[in-house]
Image 1 (spheres, protein in one colour):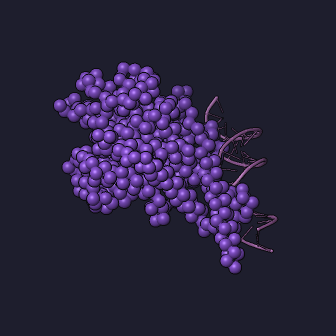
Image 2: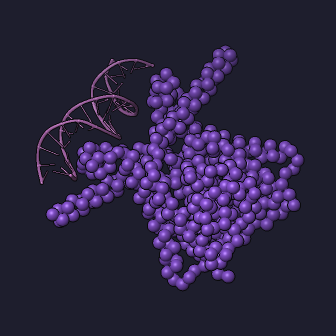
Image 3: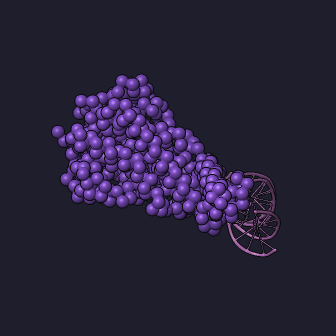
Length: 234
Length: 234
DNA sequence: GTCTATAACGAGATAGAC
DNA sequence: GTCTATCTCGTTATAGAC
């Protein structure tokens, strides 16, 4: 009985994975807007209605791909931090740049999944609540690095313009009450700027402009880290 | 005869504009990937084959929309600079932030056209050479501001990592031989980071995180300007 | 209960004959 | 330019295999 259930569950997991793999192929070929359940089913030798046992609608399949992508890049960021920490206690700037480079490497290696989560929104699709957790994993890693640097080194955040103080205090209260509002604002800005560099590279805006993408990115990411106050070995 | 030709030419211009307007509506509703000549024709009460007199292919229509979008945001940037200079000679940082804010305002007001040029690439479409000129207008405005600040104030660019020197010299030689390579690299980085903040706002990544988008952006853009060495009134 | 297959719907795209 | 026949799509209802 358990073995039957186990076999069924295994089959279900395998088929679910096969559907997502095929959907990812189509993502690369046609884009998220044209992702088609029927085409996925056809390619898998199934009939379209059978897919509804696994994904109740096309949008749910899209959501699964989005969650997978966020989890994939989030795991890459978390692993990069863990790997950096695995040696001896590295300085804050080294942790920051290691994570940034891991995110860029993931993006370059998975451009279509990157476009799915950090590119133009898919018309007619609105992300459900399920995506919020996975979507915040990279940001949480960056917050962790800043928090550690603040509590151990007492890093000084950049100055905060007066007009932005209410917004800064709200942001800090919302998701990092233990950090100075100025640091939270700087962190959010650095976070978005980081993905600006990555998007320009992945989406081709750097064509004929930046050729050594990895070197250029590493230097820019290090500057971003310094700008929020992260220190290298004193 | 000239009047007939004039009328014909006028009609052609009007119809071309109507086609592009309708195509922009579809861009908003369905996204660039699903832009369809037939749907545009139907909405205009024309037959699809008639559209080919104005745009030889779907990709050519797409190219026209892309060129228009680049020209639109480029003109916004240029006008913002001219308007800032129209008063008394403003400082470099004021010129920079004025242009940045104009670009953001344009993006927020035209999210779908913004997505067309700065979002995920359209699958199967590759931009022809015609887009290169319009695409560089915003960048040229930023270069102008940096050049003026360098020649009049002699601003000091941020340090350049040694590994990046060959790339920096190539970049400077390519499109700003009169500027220090370190400044060119910093400028390109700031340029991409600028659009990182804008993309996060326009594409919804700031949902539930940044609420005062304009204030947040203005402060971040000012910091970007300072980071490349721009000075406010001494 | 879990799954797949058949058939159908309404909407839209596409190709070609005229 | 028009019309028509034939595709695709997402989705549902239904029936039967395991």
